[in-house]
Image (cartoon, rainbow, N blue to C red; front, side, top):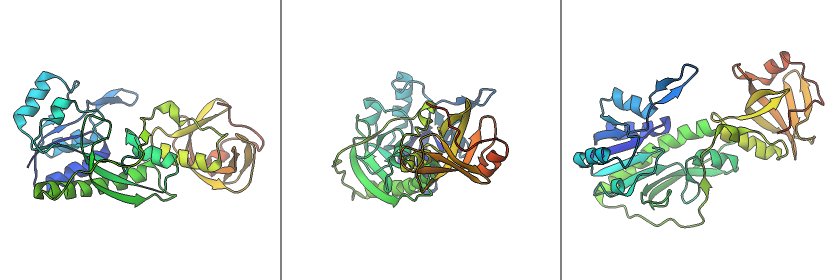
Length: 308
């Protein structure tokens, strides 16, 4: 089977690797442009491109999905199927119509819940107890296509967006191979999505600001959903501090107020309950446990984190 694979971040690599190891013919990989990163703003290739180059697969990085030259090149490849895993751009109709077996998407949620760019983060932020992976036959809508297969997993309290993404990426690769097998064997019948849809819009850096007026449980889920990017943060004496790991602590306090700051305990009041900060990252520093942070700061009980 001739396959064009479209994907960009690390989440997509296990699916591409599984297709390659299965012996399918990957005629090309389509991925987003290199992004400038770090202080030196050096262009850095996306993980899918790095894997494709290492595996000697042709790489395409179109700036415009409707570019006639790009469409002609795809058409010339005569793909039987296009597989899309976290590519990051919506495919135009000419591409959707190109492969005779259609375009298959691996999406990190139990559709129709969490359609959109950040399903893993929003599932955690909203305190979901389970999530999963869906393979679907793509149409012109935003994750609205008919479902092929689904698989679910429990969300543990220890999960954050990083750990959950890794688990779902491996599940997605396995589900993709089952989907490809079902398509080749003619056993899969696409089923329309049922139920009430919800959406997972993309996140920006500024979305990570902690609202201490929310409950401790909501802040706990927020921190998990924002890690490792864009990362939850707050300010103390105008210093931006990333909050990387917390737990809910029994008791009550005043939102934003430091209720306890001694030894390894840094406890902050919220709108309902307390938050114990376990790990945090001051501006320009590496992530550290609360105990190390407290050793370097004269943080007094009764002081307040800056107001949003």
